[in-house]
Length: 355
Figure (cartoon, one colour):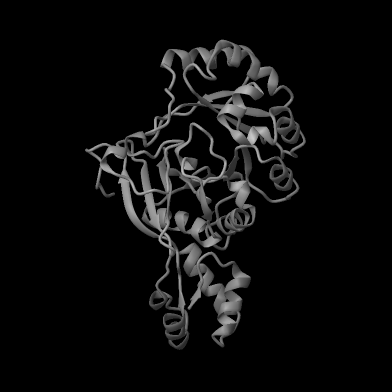
């Protein structure tokens, strides 16, 4: 059976040709799938009945099937999906103000990078997601969302996006196509733990999302202990690649810094961080650590977060503190997992809830 999920226009034209129809039919299917979010061939009413019958018999739209929706008290929703091979992945819908929303998408089932503070990589990497499995997360969330005036996409869910470069880039091209999802590339961000060759590859593209780098430490000793990728590309090498990254007008690189109590949140860390990023048009996004079962860390106090941010402000750094969203359903930064969840993971009041 032909799977149409995640195919670009050329791929749909090939599928239509296999069914013996004309190329312009692919453009119609493309609009139904990505602009109108319709996957039922019977509802694609501007297609001929003969083609709809052929599609129904010979094709499918194999976007991941939702197996759970867990809404948090703040309106955030964690989605869990079943994949065709029996594995799972998750994404997060984060509502904003004024009919805006952010969609956090996963790029892999698990993660090979094994950052010590992140649940997503605690059980290793199972496999990459396909373009259809990535785009399908956004497709599902947008189908179920209220009308939105602006959508942001962040490739910050499970997995290292730049380790699955081909599928992630195919996904952002589909999401950015004005004939389909029509989400501007400047509204998309790819977050990396510091995969230097892929940062350079991303920077060579004319059309690309924005870049975020998960830094999380100011010395190689601490960063290597938290993030094994630092042994391959230490801080100096990583920041050299970021400094060489070609930024567009008014564009900044976001540096994500997960604050772990007693590990990387000292005054000395804050005083080192500003000079470390000198010369880079940057925004520092401080993320108080979100607890996950089995991980041996603690988040900092509000006073420590304020102190850390204040020391950066005195260095004239641009700093934001990420508000915790979806923590009561294990949907906050670092809490996503491809493993099935239990009531203990999400809290007894939320287990089994639906949107």
